[in-house]
Length: 589
Ligand code: C2E
Ligand code: MG
Ligand code: MG
Image 1 (cartoon, rainbow, N blue to C red):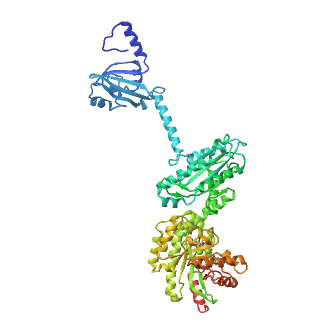
Image 2 (tube, rainbow, N blue to C red):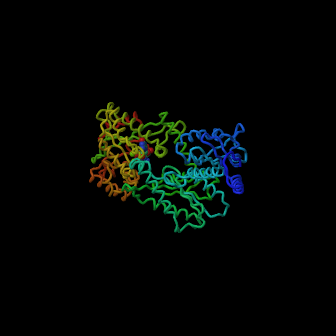
Image 3 (cartoon, rainbow, N blue to C red):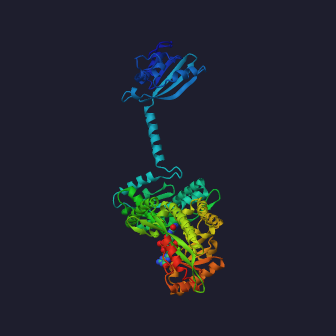
């Protein structure tokens, strides 16, 4: 111990104190207020030495200048007679540090009295290292946790899948369930983002609760790898472990579907139903890569969604090809919209007079076609669904609407009273998702000088019977003066008894009924009942897909107001339609 000043009583006590301070594992420095060092113990010399540039440790502030330049000012500004000037200040030695020695120091400075300072210096390297490790662990957890639901996220799931794929053969079976909320975007738009977020949290909780033991199909001891994760905005995944057979996984899926089909109560009091579609991949069927297993499960989910809402589909290898084909179609369709490869054809919808006459000018239905540069003309069933799934339907639908309205007004000029009186345009669910769509329609009508009553929008049963938001938008369209037709009636789930709940003016009886109108008593009765119910509700009826005179006669007998089908005409381009109308007019009774 170097003692510049001060007198201690008793040689032994003095020696003991010197030894005590000499061996202390912390550095102690006593200095005057201007930093001039009075005394310091060996530990402080060794800790501070790397910072000493000119070999002198005379002044504390000078020694610490490089790592704690604020210290001098801090001390000057500390006007109290005594107290803590700074505490636990972390000093990084950086390049000055000696390899293997302290990398970080911790510095506390105490004002002992109006003239003296006491600095305490310790090696904080281990502490800092531990903190950094803790922080890294926290960051890693955060990077693997979904912020909204606090569930593991995609990264965490992929890691877990990879770990399970790496397990030795013969380990218990596992399966991956990929789940996507049906029409979540619409729900989110209708409820607002905050309620949408809340709903996602509740869905996550319900998934967890449904999987929780007591379980009748999972051996809880073997279920080491089980995990529920949120892997996308409205996407969840469940990794099931400890499965004895494939049935086990399918049972869990069924149980989840059941639980998730129940409505959710939001804190706001709203009740919402949000079903989920699921894709299932069995661990044994997976390739060795977690990413591929997840993709396969998502492909199966898309197939489930295409079949109907709230289903589970088990992955099969053939689905990969179908998914690739859909991706090709999507890419080509994007190009088609830019290069204007799409065009519209029109199929006449004729009036069926009870006296056997046909009113050829009753209307037309606009149907989209795609002139593909390689594949020729592609029918809509090959691309409408892809357009819906990829969001391209908005642009596609707008194109059809604009072109059809323009052509329709041109016919009025060309044919006057003999021009079609009604234009029917098919509408997709996704188009109604856009809040401003009714305004777009009004704009198109105004641009073309077309009366709203001349336009009819065709919606499918599943669409017309849908949630509040869709209903509202349909009513907005009706408020403009546009009429709505229920397309393909009889193929969906709504029945005659629920027809009155749908905001439609016309019912189009599906071809599958009409094609048997003359041969099957059962189908004839169904058509008759549909016409009667529709009439009682003030709705008109159209028989779709009439191919023979016998079918036409049969639906006419049932007092169906209009008909459409190859018997009258196939869908035609605009010029061909004009020719057909001109040719048909003299014949029409
Ligand atoms: P849809 O609205 O029910 O249209 C009637 C479909 O039946 C048309 O098929 C038409 O060509 C076909 N068809 C008409 N008469 C007969 C017949 O006598 N026999 C047979 N076998 N078929 C007949 P297309 O044009 O292939 O359209 C298929 C579906 O694609 C349409 O069914 C509609 O749901 C959808 N679609 C067509 N164009 C559009 C569009 O612009 N937008 C939207 N969202 N969907 C469209
Ligand atoms: Mg239609
Ligand atoms: Mg139809």
